[in-house]
Structure formats: C-alpha cells, structure tokens
Length: 169
Image (tube, rainbow, N blue to C red; front, side, top):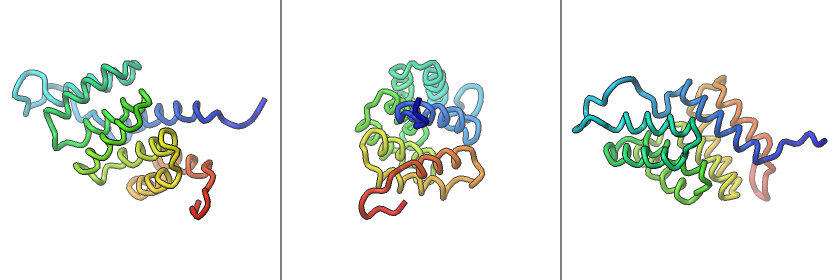
C-alpha cells in the first residue's frame, strides 16, 4: 500500500477543513441568528446565506448555489455571499464560474482570507496553476494568525507542491 495521499482525497479534506474551520474560526457566512434587520422583506441576505450554508453541509451544492446567488443579489456590496457561492461552485467543479465569483468577492473585500484560500484550491485543483496557487496561499498566510488551523493546512499544501521551473517553493 502506498503512503502517498490521493490528491482527490486531499481536495475533499481541504474543502471540509475550509467549511468547518472557517465556520468556527472566521465566521464565513454565519454572522448571527435571527432575521436580517435590513431586509426589505421577511427573507433577507443573511437568511439565504444561512440556508446556503446548511445546504453545503448537507452536500446539496446546487441548492446552496441558488441561495448564495439570492444573497448576493440582495447584498451586492457584501463579499461573503460571493465567497460562499464560489465554494459551492468549487464543490461542483465549475472552476471558471468559481474563479469569476472569487474575483467579484475580491473587488468587494480584498482582505478576506477565505478568498485567497479558495483561490489557492481553485488554482491548484481546477486550473493546474501552481504559481497562482502558491501566490494565493501566501496572501492567505499573511492575513491569518500563524497558529490558526487553516494556516497549518495551507503550509502543508505549499510543502506538498512541486515547484515548476523558475518558481520558488
């Protein structure tokens, strides 16, 4: 039996770590209980984000995508629904769509570490662009505490990547 980890398994573990880790550590998408006080109707952006997060955890990525799109329409200036939408698209292996959503999120919240974490996964696993993955994960590491569990995961990702010609590890 080989001691190497299947890269596909690593993707699944990294997505699970992202979802659980950011929910616990950074509050990705979950900002509080109750109704959205700014909602023009009974269901606001926060309720859609909450529903989308539940769908993500249940593995219903298409429904999660729909809820996150609704949240993004209600709060176009908020990067969180776009980041969550990108995650739902990554689960569906819709790499270009996820890349587009991450770009929109970046324009609205350049300092969110989640954007850089997901960009690294997207670049490595969907676009086969290790240079971009390394750059995104280095930006992520610059934004989070060194002892954060997510930082440890990203350092492992970086250590496991083979540098290409002209790229520094």
